[in-house]
Image (cartoon, helix red, strand yellow):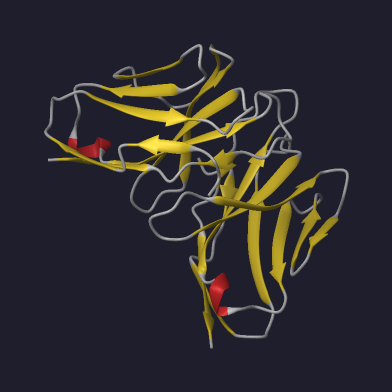
Length: 113
Length: 114
């Protein structure tokens, strides 16, 4: 039972345009969400996170939006660069429990020069 | 470089064998997590340790076990290996054990069971 879903396996975007990566979750107890980026042969790298008390968090070119009522979050990358080409994982955790992360299956982003 | 180290990078072994994967967390991090990534799967949480004590277990098989030592490094032991155990195994670390902590991942160990 996938509690974190990334339904689009891949996304291709032109350099300079916006990349929007989507993530849905089913567990209403999740209240902290993270995005990780992963290059081949490397471990996931933390990108940005958001707490459920916020609906937006921004860090440079990366912005994460959270819609709690829809149980949906998205990662916006503006402008997209070829170096952003990687697999992006959405993850969630639940305060009050341990800090284990529940991951989606990932989205492969390709940014075309 | 996340500061988390994992050895070995690659491991090839046969069914029925036993292997040990090693992880050293970032300096100052007390919590260690193990995740498994199989083909076409996201990362699946296996087990968490904090300062030497087990804190949480995920869908970890009984054939698998782990421990965290006084110097905070951790080992994941996989025994009676099966073909389906072939996967990437990642270790992550964080400062605390509670939620709302970013976890920092090592480069992973690729296990191939033949």
